[in-house]
Image (cartoon, rainbow, N blue to C red; front, top):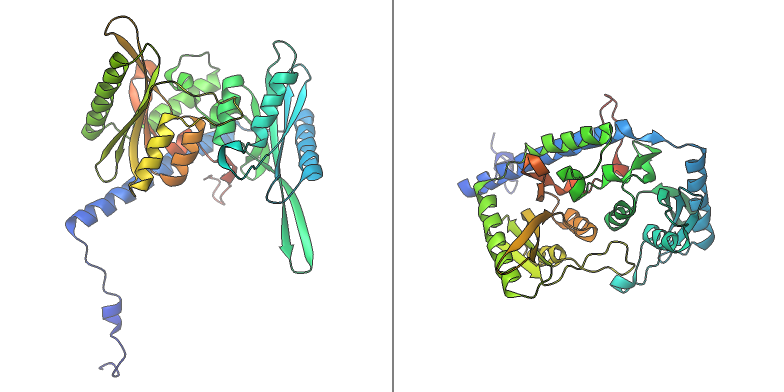
Length: 367
């Protein structure tokens, strides 16, 4: 039976859009990449959920004091985060978020608490645990409802905490409950991945898991070309400049474009209250301006030692860069150095896991 005049044929409406072969290939590549990243993220989060520990009395008290602190000084859209840091010799420091509204003046509560701890701690004292709480207020007609909750530190604060004590415990939501987890499990460092530091059996197991995850992201011929291009430019910069460290990042975009960026001096201090933009931060901004997605990147550090000789190391993106890459390039992978196991690739989702989103499914698995 014919359709009434003016009513379109449902078959025409449902007819799929015809894609070119190139568009179909790109679509399949994206689907495959998303599936691989989701598998990696699930494997990592299941491990973290398994090793996370419930709070003891001291840690529970630290969380309560962090909540009380932000409740006292809460100011909507300005001060919404408060943090408490406990040392292994009894020192307890606090920090309040400062939202300066002008970029680099702003500072996280956890990083301010760590900065205060460094000024207040006893000689040789290390951070034992950190807790951060967020307070918000919801306006609903004639009444206002406020709530305070535990939150996890951002990538910058994880970077700072990892540099102070890789074994420090982070108090945050994991699997629908507030638990503790060592910072090294939610912020893998270069030394950790390369096996250059002492590890517990649990840390060795975790490193093996990350190494296994990297096998699902092989280094391609295009990656090798990008690496060689970055190495050549690093060598030129090191040999043509003064005797100081050089940071260089090379990245390959989805468009096929290769980006490189360098800075003549190593500027990277995660313990500073002021954020110094590392070299990979600038490159990620450049690719975003070109409306390109970063697929793979590698960070080098080089230094000249003697005439026309230089050393190089494969580094990891700094905390501020991991934050930015995860936000704007969620499918990006980073080439990392696994030490004696060689180079590998890990998704940015694994290098900066948002484990506070971890929830338990009915079938017992987690995501």
